[in-house]
Length: 132
Image (tube, rainbow, N blue to C red; front, side):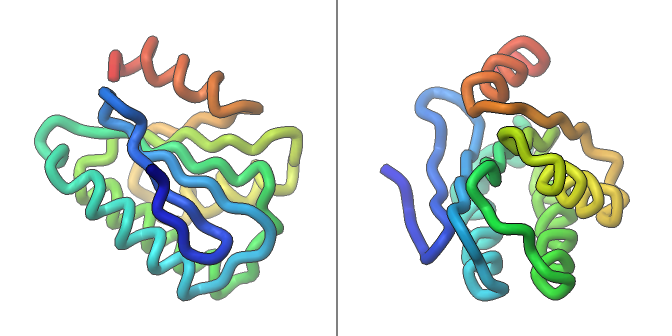
């Protein structure tokens, strides 16, 4: 069952070490901080095993610089907590893809990052690449 706060929702993919979040519309700094804390809590037991984060931003509005800074810090925290890769579901939005790539680049963690049109594509990639 998904946990929801404003524009953000978080759930664990059953039977897999994957935390999936979906944003819809406009978000804010407080919702993004909740998102970060919630994802970290869900993945807490997987630090040594490794896990993957799927961020579905296909229905999100672009974020501003303040929110972008929170996303950069979130990326660093996730990698420190054992996240092995980020799978972004950007849908067909070039703007969202550019923004998510920029945030990961600014975090400078070297984490693996891929972009997909659908959640199903992202989950298939994780299964094939990580067997998670």
